[in-house]
Image (cartoon, rainbow, N blue to C red):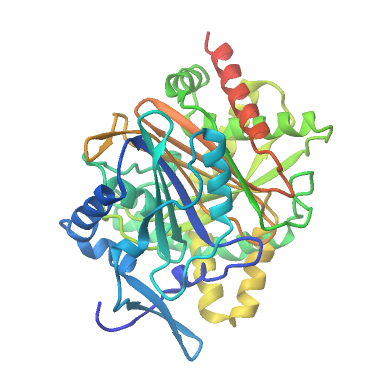
Length: 433
């Protein structure tokens, strides 16, 4: 990329860091022992020297602004050794120490003079393991793009999932021209009502949404949990894996609030990133998703009833044009309104939700990086406005892990919410016996 390229609206929307919420995706990969030098060589070979290096060209570009317009410009001093570095400071030998480290790093801005990403390697973490902290500014790409990058480093190939249950829209490639026209008309007709409904919604109000954010993050995650438990529950009830996992989000938050002595609200809104890429199109660094609000039920204490209620709402979402409408509105607001106005309106709409929840299905088999087994992967997309909680759900190799990142003003110790998620899995086990 020799000529600066104007940043598209769907990417520029994320050039909106605030003092309390940085627009940075954070990820943690735990592998068998790995050195910084090995990771640099692997990155250079498989990402920049792979079969389609243009997919990740933005990783070599910095952002320049001319006359209030932002552009991608190749960094003339790009050096991979500047971006992939050993973690500095005291040794991190335990899970609790690395979680605290990830939280501290999540508060730090990326250097705007160079491409906005970094990878910090903790070579010696626990017995025979290394930890890799990946941080990429959201303007470079969304969660699916980051997952694509992470799997580009792996020894095995990965076919990305399609279908709303795995974080994307129903396939467009299988539609005939008349169905495509129907969808386009539905999007156009639905746009005004979708926007009006979102403007009219009240913001969530609870112990977890409302207090002023501190800007300091805390991080925790579950042990790898058995995916078979989720599959047995979904087969028993006639739901999908995604229905069951999203129901655990509702149940965990209800349990956490009850233990804090706070009444669970009747309505609980989460922002759910939905991939709007066409099936078959190669994943590359870009933002192609809609931040779709999903209302989760809190009223039922029965696990199966909760799953069925979530299934009903997700089924309605699959059949609607809402994700495409939201994606179009996101782009239009930034493209046609002054930045201060569009940012205020986007923040106003986002702030109605309590948390951002992502769910990505990885490969069903074990994976490795330069022959080192990957033990776990977690990532969190950023929150904006006054949203202070992010939930990450990722599954691979027959396991599922759930991670929490939260502002300490809301969740001083996110391990308590993680414990509630683990209890939800115990409830699923009892359900499927």
